[in-house]
Image 1 (spheres, helix red, strand yellow):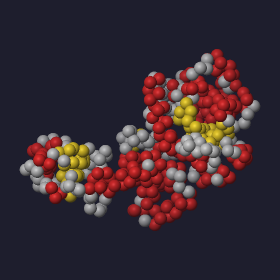
Image 2: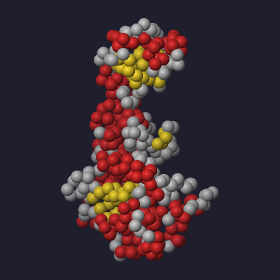
Image 3: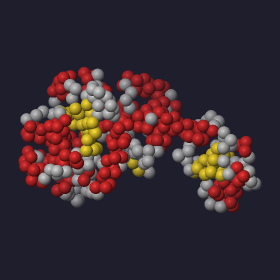
Image 4: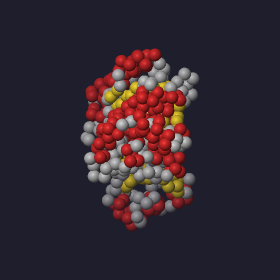
Length: 422
């Protein structure tokens, strides 16, 4: 696959800038090479935007090269000014340690760390930065970079022109990233760094340091930052960032995010956020365009991403849960069970369930209604559904229980609750 790797990346829209293409192709053909992608641990999870980079690493790995995933325990203490108009908050050591652990867990699920020939490496730049003194850093790294070059970087220029300027701490970030590339080049034979287009200046700073300090050669490749067709930032919703950690964004919500993407975004996301071959994506889009109302592309996109990140079981549960809430088929116990962990749930005893006006009691217990009188009023107004059917009676009998124990109770379109009868 090596000879087709750059062509494949290009077909996916994953090449924005790169150093000399012929030299890069020659190096890939003569490979395998080691290539690294860095993530700063500003949170205990990575988000959808980071997934693009991790999957580019995986594409290199599947072409026979060795991926190095770098978690920036050191650079995370400084903060990258790229793409920001203000200073990042500095994190304490305990928070950084926790964030690094959370990110590592996700990366281990997305890259192959067992392969004999191209096993992925996971590194933390704090390990080689913590013992470096300021004087050593100025002599061995700062000496090889000119302020003229550093100020010319877009990430620095935009901040210097802004209202608050840029601190020396964030100004020095590019030197730390260059040092990372040099260290990996010297100690792990790494000859390529990849990243989003906003990282180009930082990455080529590393190739320059390798050339000046070690007389070595290295390569850089960036991809365009993804934005949605409506102009909104990719991976952002009204509720915040879409994360890859199940503790921050439920697999069901991740699945729903991709089911809702615009038709114009579906192809790009299939190309960049899945490992499907380009020809298969073309076939999916052809099927999608023949009947856009079926949203075939979005369905396949959602399934592929959730399976990559959380596994096939999580995808199956997300689909069952969606079928429970929005499907046209009859609700089943399996569907209701899939909602556990997604919708709030309340357990009631069989004796309580068999009481008179049990639905009124349930509506109050679950918080779907504020009181018994509120429950009666909402039942009378047709706002309550039981197992997706409008309900007006104040009681529900055992025949309504799915698999003899589940009841899906909803108020309006969004408030829902799973009732489990034991």
